[in-house]
Image (cartoon, rainbow, N blue to C red):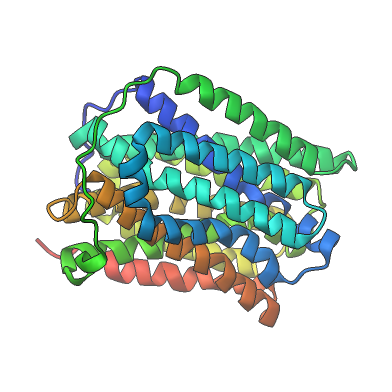
Length: 384
């Protein structure tokens, strides 16, 4: 995709609203970072074991990216979507009821598989439905669910401030999202994808597939990782209380939402430089998070990180669909996108967790700066 100008013509409709609801279901699976500190305190686990809870979504993405295409072919899109939502709901229930960390980890593995199956289907669904207007559609359906993430942070932060547990609000919010999602998907017509039982990973040998795929990996490594560790960072490094940390961390999701909703304006201002500038802002924000002193300065740095990270995922996925679309159909593109996201989600939280166990979480956030530097270097526009 050329980022010189935004595409016009995107409109909200029932399918798009239902897709947003689906991404809100995925938020239920990936919001475990909000309670990382509680898990560490309750079970006495290391940063690596804690990070595994966030990385299970990445494991699911790898599994579904490699093997999920025949599943979608056999089930059809609608049944695959219903299966994805059922797995998320079941996994979150196990996570919230788990009396020990192996059980909570199992819950995140199950919900991660459901979220991954949704990621396998959703991008192709949006691409088939919105066609050339998929860039703003990608931004919209990935932006609005940030409000669900904010709701999780606010609700759990409020209950922790009141010396209540996190499990009940987490389960209740998930139940509300499940009900809203079931209502949104009722009687929605879906575009039919092409059948593609011949899906293969041999397309990685094609540079037009592998290079944009690797860029998705880098984006997810940077953006997802800083989001999943945000609450724990504000509590353990910034000194925020157990209740205040989730409430303060909403600035990250709020900026993700606001910038993605205004992605067309961002593209008009930055044009071809949007991706490299976004990476630069994210990397510098991580530096500020490391060296900032008072809590308010660390919250401000996290806010800037949200601004920088927001445009990256929807635009880089859109570029992948543009570049690799001549080689793969919509569900195949979704499978490759799921694989890329899986690598990033699986490795990113663990990378910060391992570094935090070695040198502390404060210095571990500089991993984001290194990843952002790679993004700046590889996505800098070439002279025309």
